[in-house]
Image (cartoon, rainbow, N blue to C red; front, side, top):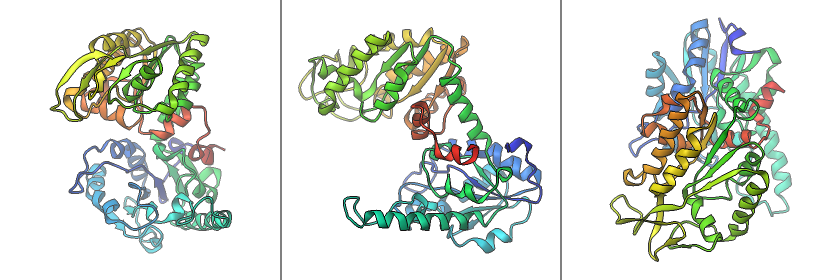
Length: 415
């Protein structure tokens, strides 16, 4: 069943959204991209004459109630975005009456799902090495199923529109789907778009294909780097992982980020790229700083020769040119991870150069997919989110999809 083909008139729809939005110290939303992303699905259900039960997680409360992660903080923002009043259920597992009382066009927001350990389905307070762990895991799986069934009991139809959690086999993202037949469970518009965007990157590649992988660690990106090796023409590796490669090649990197146990892996990636004919683009120079602050003293230096007491914090001017050249001619582009500490305005030039080159290529007909929290924050910061083909709301989910893994949240609906 697709959301377009379903008529929600008189139906209660429980929708898994990803409202895990960033909040400031006063509980105010600093970026509402995820709420805006869910609106087409939510508005379609209300316009049909259905009622909405919204469920989401926020943060990592680890199965305990924590006011810091309460969705009550965002209720008014959701109401404003939807243009209608939103009721609130302070306990997601005790909302039967509130759900039953919903009339067509009404909206109920459930409290944070992760206040219950059953949502994630992991035993709490027991180590994996403990002999009793397997039994505890089995018991938790049974509890998770009951928790999912309780959530399902509130509604007639289930819609998953939370791509950001689609790689998790949680109660609300996968297990709940077992309680609905094929005609009463579906992906929301945002999920459909995400699945299509990944398909464009993996199945419908227009060449040349340039992937840009940033971030601090090679180890967290190794699966995706290896999977992309068989698909891309150009692979740009940037951000903190630059210095692991520089050190592996015998460079002096000062205080720069480095995974000392991954130097052999870095050399192996370079060897693989050569063998597969992939143009691997690494930084040649960087902006080095003498402290981790926007006001630090800086100098441009070779990534192979960073002075003692200094650390690489952004791509240098020559590196930016290299990156831009590898991006401009591309017809398919994937960007995940910044080129530097873009949160500091003085160290955002490398990430900005990448973003601007992607926009230029997109204007020339490329399909560009930007995904992963930091890359999304980059294009939003630079005001360029509307100038790329697609901005993904999923970080880990996007990476796992591109690694070629099956996402439980999608498999639970599509089979």
